[in-house]
Length: 251
Image (tube, rainbow, N blue to C red; front, side):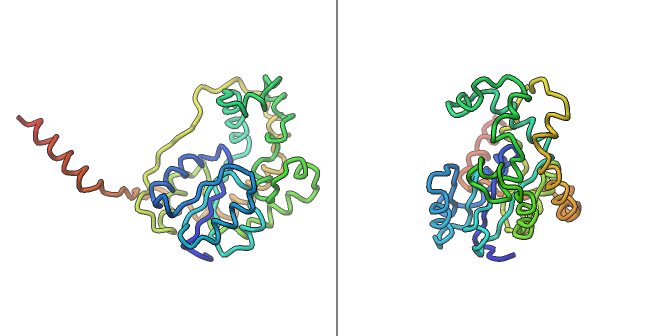
């Protein structure tokens, strides 16, 4: 581990990252964490947070940029089986929850249509290769080797499929007081899916990257399976209120 007091969590969309983000927010004071979900002046935002001695945790939808790779921060992420991740991504966008989704999904009514979106292709490889410009990412023939090489820069890796063990592992590594596993932003009713080949074509690089990450990191998580979560005690005022409510119910 490089610098245990400065944690960078790369939140790849639809990998249970929202649940982990909420855990981060419960383990670090607001003054100790920096949430970055806008790419406007991204490298400057990251540089500022990395240089801020008060910040202990940085997280958001940003790729493994050089400013992160070259820092002393501890870098972690969650991976997810690529086809399952893509299906979840498609279903999430299909809900058109905001103006951005509406614009992106204009004229897209099926997974086959979804494949035309830059954002649908090899998303995990894009984040690990460090590309901010998705069109440039698609044109670079070396993105997969770059992403595979960047596995060396990750200090800890979790997997959506081993989420509870991943949280137990992260919790022990970073001395978190709260490792209670909860699931958020998990979608809902799923749309009809396309042929497997459609999803495979969108994730050819991701399938290779995921397999490499599993072979390298997944075995470590087995030792954390079944760990009882750490749950912080409620504040004294909350415990007193609970006690008084329980006491009054007896009369």
